[in-house]
Length: 527
Image (tube, rainbow, N blue to C red; front, side, top):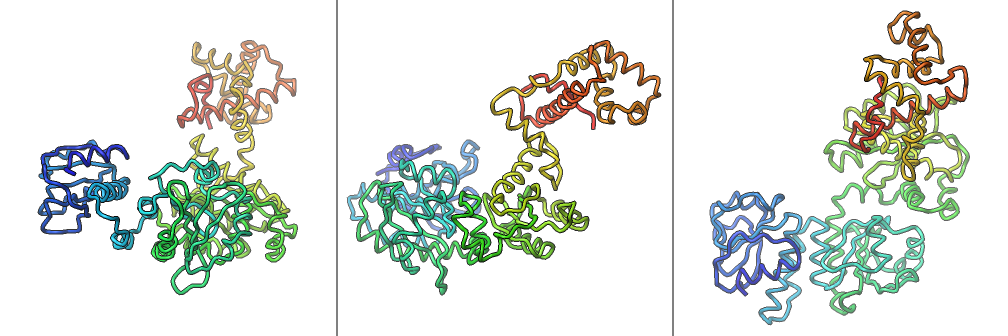
């Protein structure tokens, strides 16, 4: 098969941009560029753009992986050149290798893949390469049944596994099923077991992954029997593959930090759907079933921070400051369960200062829930701490530490937005005042906001606006005339205060580019 023919077949598996193709030589095999000084004219070489830039000599047959496939590559001297996205380079190598094997009619020698797999450090490249070799879809999971990587060589049409991949983890009901099956009895040495379950009739071949010299397993490989039947070849290879993957997982701080921690496992399972009854034995053993005032912190990172720093060093510093706390990890966030130290305040003054300092220094954002006593409310308050991070991001409030109690109304509006247009709930007086201000160059809108914000005190409002009391009285009379509202009516005052909060929320969302340009874009609130 010549270069142009192979590129045509590869384009069936994804985007391949051909720059030029002049050779009529038959391609004998494929290889990666590894700082060679000489290249074979019958070998198609694969390389990252950066690595190829360092070469003095160039292969005549080459496929380059680049972040931007549409940048200029005409200056590269290769006579036969094509570009793919960098993240798809390994996939295209796998496809090219198999295509050439089939085209040559030679028997497939699976052992030729072992040196390639041994050098891999990326789990997605690993899963796609294994899918190519095994001719079935592959999913790599960790000990907490979290999806670490999955192949896309073949479509995963099974509805259960499609949902698992979308969510990023097994549902808790599937976890309990898995841990009751033969899988729990499978040896940690990687010997594969065949499984089926009520939720998905698709047969699966599973192999546990254990760290070298360790009796405990840290993850597992799942092969879905969708494209080809489970064979002796799969059973032979799964243990070898599990040992290779264990070397990659050993470098992952998340895997090593979650290992052998009953606190982390129990809290994680409650986040993904376990009820207190499901994990009651663990809760009692850990003492979490006792009624104590607690709250939840959810921590995410803004800057590029190493996994080791975020998953190991940050939790260690938090543990030093909060000795009675317990952490777990979910969706690239640290989740911390803490005991309330003060009767009236969630945190002491020194603890507040510590969180602001570590957040500002390390580029973190920290959301804090309301307090609760029963561990049955843990997930609900985890959602509060997570939600306040989402809300502050939506309204572009760049605060390192935010409390859910301060954004209750914003959460209510955020929930309402899913079913209705919340600016419809704004009192018409706000729009009337804003329109009047624009025409007459006045500031009645802000005056009314300040008046309500200072409990309708003329003195406090005049001081806040830096105007004379008589000037404020004149403005208030003008407001009544323009809007025809009765500020002695407590119900009217409540409606106006709610309306100003809606206006503030929508104005911030508009500034952050999170909402449409409607009335809210005109209701800008001065802080």
